[in-house]
Length: 241
Image (cartoon, rainbow, N blue to C red):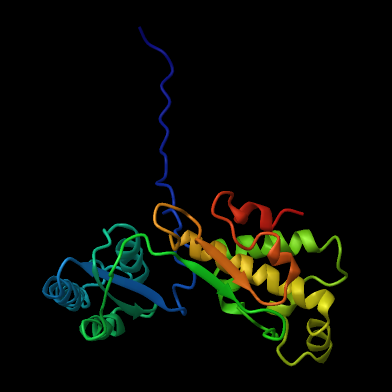
C-alpha cells in the first residue's frame, strides 16, 4: 500500500526561561546557601564548590551560571543544622569563589526546629522615588505582584503607582505626589506585597508553609486587614480589588 508521505522538521524549542526564580541575574545579588550536619562538612562543601567553579571558569561551556548555582543550592539541597551563605551576581563566578572561601568564617547553627518566620515592612515615611526599581525591572514574582496591585489601584487613582518606581528620581511633581497619603500608602502596600510574594517564591516561610508565621508593618491600615494569618493565606487577599 502506498500513499502521500509528508516529512516535517521540527525546530528545537527555545530554552525555558527561569527568570521568575532568578530575577536580576545581571545585577542583583544572588544568595548561595550552604548547609551541612557538621562544621567540618560545611567547610568542605564550600571548598568543593569553590574548587569546581575555579576548574570550570576557563571552560565557558561547562561552567554553570551563577543564577543556576543559586537556584540549585536554594531549591535542590536539604537544610541541615550548620549553615552559611555566599553572595554572587550575574557577572561571572570569580566573586562567588571568593565569597565561598570566606563563608565558612561566618556560619550559624540552628538551635531548634520550626522557628517562626516574620516579615517586617516599613510604613509611611520610608518612601522615595525609584524604590525597588531594580527588582521591578528584573521581573519575576515581584513585578507580577506589583503589576496586579497597580492595575487594581488604577481604577481609584489618577496616577499609575508604577510611575513612583520607574519615573525620574529628580521629578519634583512625582516626589510631591508620592508624599501625599493617597499615593504613599497604595505604593508602599504594593511594594510590600510584591516583596512578600518574591520571598515566598524563594521558599522563605515557616517550615512546611509557603508564608511567614506573621507579617507586619507600620502605619498602613490596608495591611492590618491581612497582616497576621496562619490559617488563611494573605497573599491572595492582599491584591484582591
